[in-house]
Amino acid sequence: MKLNMNNLWNEFLKKGKIENLPIIDIHCHMGLFYGSHMPYCEPEKMAQRMEIVGVKLCIFAHHYSLFEPEIGNKIVVEIVRKFPEKFKGYFSVNPHYNVKDDIKNYEKYNDVFVGFKLLPDYHKVPLSDKRYKNIFDFADEREIIILTHTWGNSIYDGDKEVEKILKKYKKIKLILGHFLHGTWDKAVEIMKNYENVYLELCAVVDERGILEKIIEEIESDRILFGTDFPWFNHYYYIGSLFGAGLSADDIRRILYLNSSKLLFQTKPFHISEKK
Image 1 (tube, rainbow, N blue to C red):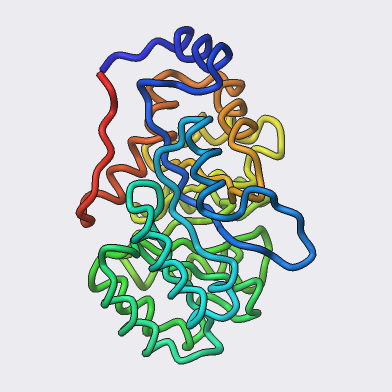
Image 2 (image 1 turned 180 degrees about the vertical axis):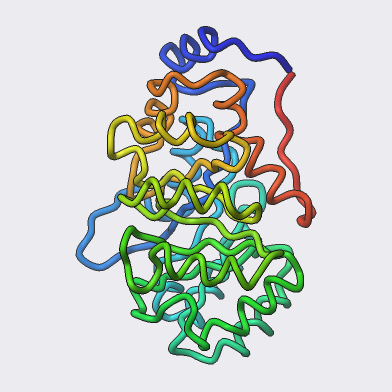
């Protein structure tokens, strides 16, 4: 399907969405979070907001599961099975708990979970710590997605920790949440050196000109659309893509096609573009 950039932009401005191009948000959350006001954090209201802006699928980790995975991951199962066309889940891992039990629970729900979610900065456990080893071994053997929080110069999930994992594990699909925010040159270098790593856009576009710089350095085929929704607004992120001077093909890859290929090669669900 040939896309025209002017047509896409005009349709987005006129309708607030693009009818013939689905959007996959690869980095979402759900549920209440202490100290924060999020009026669209429950599945029904999230689904309504997604429909307005044209997001067809959100891959999410529930806020509860980030800290108490035994409780939160069960909630994810209930939500995905209630809204299977709108949501798929990440199985969140807290390395302070029994990770071996996590793996057993993950395998029970292959209709719900598309991969694992790690938060090394929050849990204060480096990616290379032995407490994550069973997860990485399991994911590498099965070529499973891992979305990990990353941040520039972090001792828990900065570039040095990310490279330790990528040097050892060649088959995992490692998504760099926030793309090592702030250490952009090192992040691009990692993308060039390892084929099984993906750039995720959440918080990247808070700095003007960075997306344009990244596109000059690497192809758009491993850049994934993510927002941390409901923390941030889809319109801001979609508008940032259009404002970066990308081609229509780049837009399509980032909003939908790259995530579609990554998710659907191993999972029994699919989203079709309207012709």
